[in-house]
Amino acid sequence: MLSKDVGTRQPSCGISLYLDGRVQRLEDMFYSSPEALRKLGAHVHVKHDVLKIDAKRQTVVVEDLINKDVETVHYDRLVMTTGSTVIVPPLKGIDSRRVLLCKDYDQAKQIYKTAEENKHITIVGAGYVGVELAESYASTEHVVSLFQNHKQILVHSVDQMLSENITQRLVDHDVDVHLHERVTGFSADPAGDGILVETESGHYPTDLAIVATGFVPNTGLLSGQVDMLPNGAILTDDYMQSSDPHIFAAGDACAVHFNPTNENLYAPLASTAVRQGTLVGLNLLTPTLKYMGTQSTSAMEIFGSTLATTGSTLAHAQKQGIDAATATYEGNYRPAYMPSTAKLTIALVYDRDSRRILGGQLLCEHEVAQSANTLSVCIQNKNTIDDLAFVDMLFQPNYDEPFNYLNQVAQIAVAQEQQRGRKEPKNSDQAASEI
Image (cartoon, rainbow, N blue to C red; front, side, top):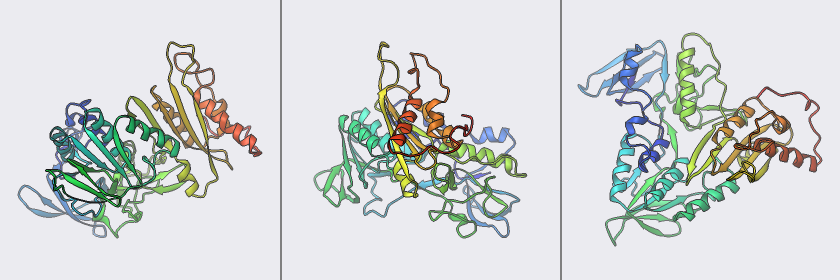
């Protein structure tokens, strides 16, 4: 095992937890260490850099970063878990010391340190990382600006309705949100020590800018040697094997099979990486356990509320040519006669032709993240809105209504299709798959 680093990196989402003080030490979010791996029998070589991979000869050229020795090592199997790097847009002034990236341990340390020294923080990019950073900075009494080159935030995770809801929450906590405004560069602020964030609409002064515009696979060492997506994500088969039978890949270095729309795409998540890595270990010598694909299920806490998502958004499904629709549930998560309850919003995305569930988005002050996991299983098993409408779920007034809210949003979807005059599938009386 070869690595430049001495530790196993924490997921990017952990940076916001460290920033707002909920986690005191970044090191506590490492899920392993060289010492732990050595105890398992691995030969771990830290502070080594792989300079070249020759897939035909099955060799890697490695430099020892301490003594600068270079050697060529033969392999029987190669596992690419080289992760991803932050997309660095070609912006003027991005190399300024007041412009930071957000991905790894060293960058997290720098972000934490500069948060103590700077009051006004500008974040470029409003995906999960950008929104989580905005929430953390706003919660620690910083002045926060957020720029997004799109009409909505969280564009890959939620549709317009919930995006607007989250945007309003950011605004209510004094985050200055700029939508559909592309950042074009950074320059020194002649009026002070900070910088100017330059956009097509104007220049905005700030103390510090953090670029969180997404990630790209770190797979240049295998460029042209295995099949990849256009962005460099390695394509793998059911057993995590690349187009070269001697090379496997896992985590942010490779593509995923996205079950809702039956396509290969790039969706870097820690949950996906740990599953793929485990599968590589099981399949390295003999094909043993197939990769199930993913629904890219995820969640975040935003100002005391839970946002949980799984599967495809409506916009993405329609872009793939699917006749998709959304059913929306807006109500309490448990009965109004209880001492307290909370408003819950669910957007359920489904295929109108097959009635299959494609995705779901939930937002509530109550913790509803596990309901996204339930929907993930439904998507994995190709369940329909008819299945979900009446599937057995517990009822207890502390937790839900006699019909769970997932039952209810599916019943809304069924009613929508009845109103549209759609006929139910001929096999609708057959259970698709056990949930």
